[in-house]
Amino acid sequence: MEKKRVLVVGGGAAGLMAAIVAARAGAAVTVLEHNDRPGRKICATGNGKCNLTNLEMPFDAFRGTDPAFTEKILAQFSVKKTIDFFTELGISIVNKNGYLYPRSGQAASVTEVLCMEAGSLKAKLKTNAHVREVFFENGLWKARTEDWTYEGNALILANGSCASNIPGADGSGYTLAESLGHRIVRPLPALTGLKCQCMYSQAGKKKGSSSFALWAGVRTEGELTLIIGGEPLRRQRGELQLTDYGISGIPVFQLSRYAIRAVEEGRKVQIRIDFLPGISKEELHRLLENRKKACPYKNTKEMLTGLFPDKLITVLCQAPDLEEAIREFPLKVTKGLDFKQAQVCSGGVDTDEIHPETMESRLHPGLYFAGELVDIDGTCGGYNLQWAWSSGAAAGFYAAKETK
Ligand SMILES: Cc1cc2nc3c(=O)[nH]c(=O)nc-3n(C[C@H](O)[C@H](O)[C@H](O)COP(=O)(O)OP(=O)(O)OC[C@H]3O[C@@H](n4cnc5c(N)ncnc54)[C@H](O)[C@@H]3O)c2cc1C
Figure 1: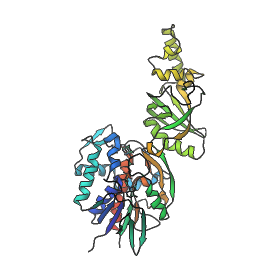
Figure 2: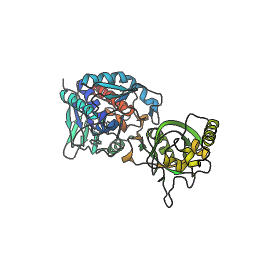
Figure 3: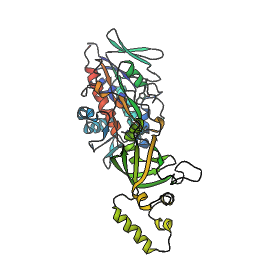
Figure 4: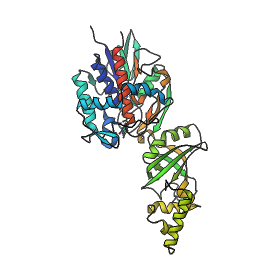
């Protein structure tokens, strides 16, 4: 019997997984990748070490218009299956507080084992193949590149998003999906820093400058509260990076998709920083009083030395009320950084138009989606790759089952 032919657009995390699973299920697979090699983004993940998944699956690890969409897909190709899959391919996995990495310490090893496995299954990996058009004609799915039109019984779009400055992240998957009538939830940068204005007019400013020049470069522990339209929505604690445009660091990344989307919707977005999380207003007052009493010869700046980094002290001392500034430093969020400086995108192909068990389009039988192209984004911690593995596996499996 003739093998089912599966076309995969995008040789990234989701596309390579889809190709392997489809080939293992007996399909003849062709992956079309416009970069000169597959998996370039995988190689950049986790600071080059690839946080490939996480043992913890908190309920809010995945975001999107309908985060519950992920449940059946993650249940089919779970974290356990991910670990088994990569272990079988040769990736020895190390556990760093629940965050899983290849023992090699090299993200490139993950790309390499995926390509080796795809190759051993005779999946064709066509590089330098930019897919500019996809369509269904005479009973077949077609993907047109500059010099060829590829045909298959099923088509998987796994183009990824337009986040990062890694070559290939051009957002062309949105255009391809849209050309087939799929609705795109507007992609916006996520897991990125936030541009802010200080709500104390002078704090943070050097004379004549308009930014946070005074605190740029500081790394400090803090707790952020995201306030949208006056309502406190989410809190995140961890190491903040204070920058000349505003704030960055993991806790900022985790909140960024909500803040950026709300700003785009024209809503009022604020972040309040607690620079001494975990202690009450009264405790803070006592702490400062005790420091004053212990060393009465110190001015306010000197009294804070040893408690906060110098640059932060300078900024805090410009605030009208020191204690309030330490506990609730108020920032107005004006914008996120741009796509190139974001790790992922929120938004993408509307999940309402995709079957939640198979990743097949509800509009077109034989068309599948996988990975970040879909309106699902994960928090930091390996969740975006887990989504790519799980959705890629589902798309590959069901695309290979597609009846002609
Ligand atoms: C710096 C950085 C660090 C990250 N670290 C982590 C981490 O540690 N853990 C984690 O879980 N997530 C991490 N992420 C996110 C994660 O890398 C992505 O969510 C994941 O790679 C998405 O997989 P994907 O297959 O959907 O997209 P991609 O991996 O981006 O793959 C899409 C592929 O499609 C190709 N393509 C696009 N359009 C076309 C076209 N028209 N024709 C042909 N080919 C096309 C692209 O070149 C690309 O190779 C990180 C992201 C960045 C940028």
